[in-house]
Length: 219
Image (cartoon, rainbow, N blue to C red; front, side, top):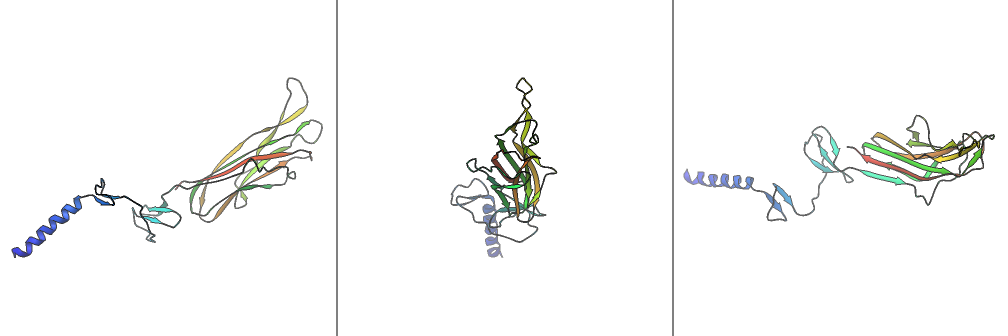
């Protein structure tokens, strides 16, 4: 009987000693319960309720809260227009997509979307014509649909008296920034559209020289 119990006793002691030790892979002196000196490859699991589990989707790392999978790595992506390739004169009152500024999100999640646009007009007009309401307007769209209740002006007309009533109108740059929180469940594309708004047909040129879309995932 003694010969049977003795090995079991020694085995239990060894298990306790191992359990009390830190484990190191690639390092002889681990300072935590598990230390890996090198890369770690993580696979995929379809388990729905594995609290504390980490998995790789192939394009993202996710962790399980016990109720759902959440993105582990914050996602940031940006699309912007270079000032070397501006959007210039367009037909009045017609929306035109700002070229080179389109951002598509394919990974589901909640995102903070930031839109920016800036431009200028080289026009200076006197009152008496039909040009007084000439302005540059912007619209921010998600899958082709505007997320704004109404367009936003980024080139605005202002009276310029310069000390005397010159009846002159100058056009000033008014940079616009808009933020929107969107729940993305399927492939979604964000774009910026702009137009020259006017009741007349002024021989003018207005320019979008900066436009940007930034997406930051919140979960």
